[in-house]
Image 1 (tube, rainbow, N blue to C red):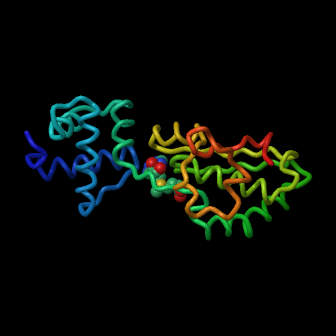
Image 2: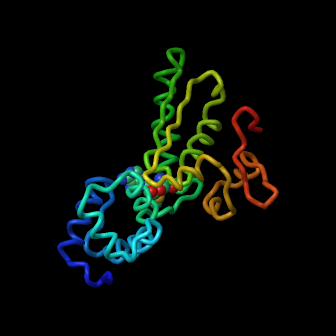
Image 3: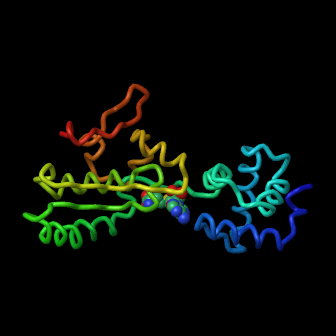
Length: 196
Ligand SMILES: C[S@@+](CC[C@H](N)C(=O)[O-])C[C@H]1O[C@@H](n2cnc3c(N)ncnc32)[C@H](O)[C@@H]1O
């Protein structure tokens, strides 16, 4: 059975399932992306073809492992340091000073959530911003929680090592100040305890 034999109603059911279980939205104009992602997921999950994968997913609630594989094929990993400059600047110039003012001398606690952190460039950008804007950072309890639906992206985020392409929008000097060059020419984030 080929993908073209998957009925329209099955695609609709699948998009509903994916939206409900994973929060990923595939309107009809993105069904091409869905089909491409599904073909990759089907192969990784060991199905004979993508159509068999669709039938299986619709016949019983997907397992956690199946959802993880689906997420890794259906998400887009576009991320780089200081990607959304305007938002980060608004955070640094308008939101952060107010939070610091309100909490300084009290519990000195900041908790930040990067809710779709991809491979980590966003939460590390936030950490760097805090390091730059909070001279007494060591006196604060700061938590940056980074989550993503794609567990492969999270593994890369935890590794904290990046290629040149991740710095395409980074402020000058960022790489030199906050990263160490690795033997294979990549850049590893420097832990705060030894940041320069
Ligand atoms: C285009 S990237 C943006 C990454 C980062 N926020 C940035 O701006 O650099 C989108 C990320 O959202 C994640 N994502 C999409 N839907 C999600 C969901 N429902 N829950 C958690 N993460 C999700 C994807 O896995 C991907 O890593």
